[in-house]
Length: 116
Image 1 (cartoon, rainbow, N blue to C red):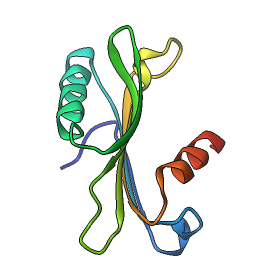
Image 2 (tube, rainbow, N blue to C red):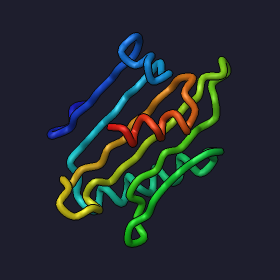
Image 3 (cartoon, rainbow, N blue to C red):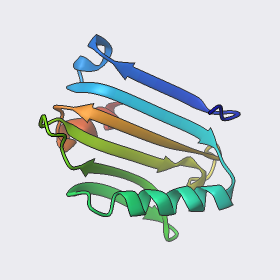
């Protein structure tokens, strides 16, 4: 499915091994307030069983969240990162969703995300 104005990134292999990741998929899409509310509700439902998370709300809305999901059967960690850029003044009206897998723990990912 193609989304107008969307940016998709899919990385695997050597390009992300430095970050202790084996898979990185991101989607940044322009969105309306109605659509962002729907996506936000879906994210909060999908991650309700996450056993480790960090999130921040702005004016009662989910601004960002980093969630660790259950590991795969092979012990690979899985994460979802969400950020609604429209909730901060001066930012684009878009949402970023990232799915990651790898040996990285949440502390390593937090450190990586705050560097960039």
